[in-house]
Image 1: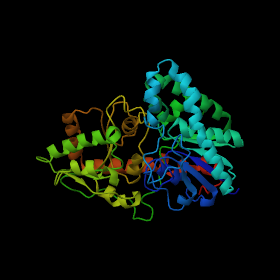
Image 2 (image 1 turned 90 degrees about the horizontal axis):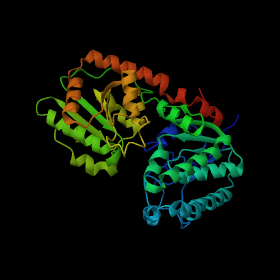
Image 3 (image 1 turned 30 degrees about the vertical axis):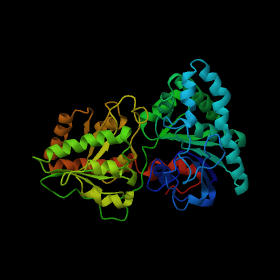
Image 4 (image 1 turned 90 degrees about the vertical axis):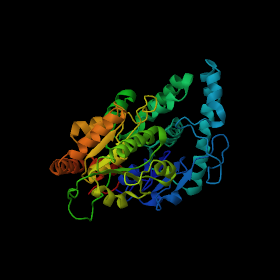
Length: 428
């Protein structure tokens, strides 16, 4: 069976180093560039070099003009963005808002279809299936509408509960937005060849909510230790080295990481503990602002493969999310991409965030490390001190168990096998 031609819709482009595109790239490894045509909206995501010529930014809504690096911020309906103040205006209309949204806003979203149809025709691209990995009603409607129009099967990756998050931003329109998403999912259901998510928690929720069975792929990651010597525990030392890698969006990971940095800085006066931060350049102002000589250090931006040495040098690897109820909607049921990488390198995890965060449940259930479910600095300091006094033998035991868990439940070669079979990609 040859490779399928894939028409891809998402906020994130397929990427080797950024965002949800990392997970997609791992699963689609080996797909020939000519067998993909992609559409995305996040301009800060750099597509993988091999796929970059095959990706197109979606137009700025209402203009038909493609987004580009020299244009203003694109007007997308994701993460609470408000194109032209339209949502603010609709909120003020009260009961009339849903009617006006149906008459004006949703047809406005439909303008994307003309853009996609034109570029498909110019490219001569005839897909075998449609792949949705989006985070908004905008990209969902586009993917499903295209699949219906072409009568092609649909693959869905729902990494986070974007449905609850996006709907929650729209005040009086929240219920209406939820119904629009549910109606589009209902339209998609007969065409879904495969659907998956990044955690068992989210898979259960989406399967029950939309009647579309979702497999769990746990943010499947490649083997970061491939080609290296066999796994080994961290070097014995008298202190504790913590490492954080990833995005530091203020209301998603950043606020909580600042609290971790505060705790480390205070402990440093009496304990040999250090926090190292690896984050993309856009988070450098925040990372540098919380740096404390000898205690908290911003180490720049590295690709996952280049991070391996930093991971292996560490005693614990840090994952954070917000403590705010109104901000946890997106990640409540999710496992962070970094967790799979952390487990792969076999180091204990320090998870800090909202008490209902699925990642903390997962860490506790599998004994992957230590969880902190309160923003109380004293309790966070106590958790770090527990990590500090944990014996090297115990850290090694947890590390080996984490590496084993990765092999069983996070290795992309195992977790993405069904998807790769559908796409006609090798599964060995």
